[in-house]
Amino acid sequence: MKIQAVLFDLDNTLTHRDQSVVVYARQFLQDFSYNLSSHELEKTVQIIRRIDNGGYPKKELLTHPSIAASVGHALTEALAWKATPDLEELTQYWFQQFGMAAVAMQGAADLLQYLKQQQYSLAVISNGGHATRLKILEGLGFSHCFDEIISSELVGISKPKPEIFLETCQRLSIQPQQALYVGDHPVNDYAGAIGAGLNALLLNGFHEDVAHIPQRIDKLKQVVDYLD
Image 1 (cartoon, helix red, strand yellow):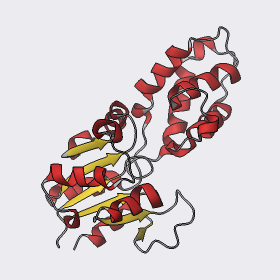
Image 2 (cartoon, helix red, strand yellow):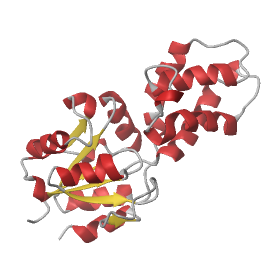
Image 3 (cartoon, rainbow, N blue to C red):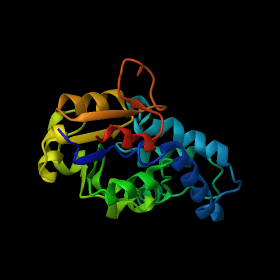
């Protein structure tokens, strides 16, 4: 059955999470420089990386319910503050600014432009808070590209459950076999999409133990090779 829609994961598929962390850390230090005794970029980046873990935080490293608050707490304790900032201020700063620091995955903009020109339906399926998903897409400048933006918070279902993939297909008015899903996670993305009856591609480079997955690509531009 011919592909009519291309669906994407967000973190480490359309946006490069680690590069975004570096941009965020740099902006954070600039905006709070008035209250910091030193500019410790590498230390700040390492703290965020440890807690964020590429968007898949380890529960034992989360001191608070969210990545935002856990990162804020760690930074209040580790950086050389002149006066300790309010945790709520740092938490809200993450929610407001992390998405705007998003760095696009190489080839993402060109691929989306091509797919729109070829009149494919496009959607994002991403686990996480809906407002954060929207903010990241805004930061990337990709919001206008998508017919549907589906988050686990929006529909109350998380990947890899098949229902989140099927819900997206239903909203696009297509059959699962007419969709190609692209993501970086072997379980949440690839196995989840395949289990729901979609076609799927795994973007290499972000997770181990993927050699058993037959449909893998190294760069987003290779997606076009799987559309026919």
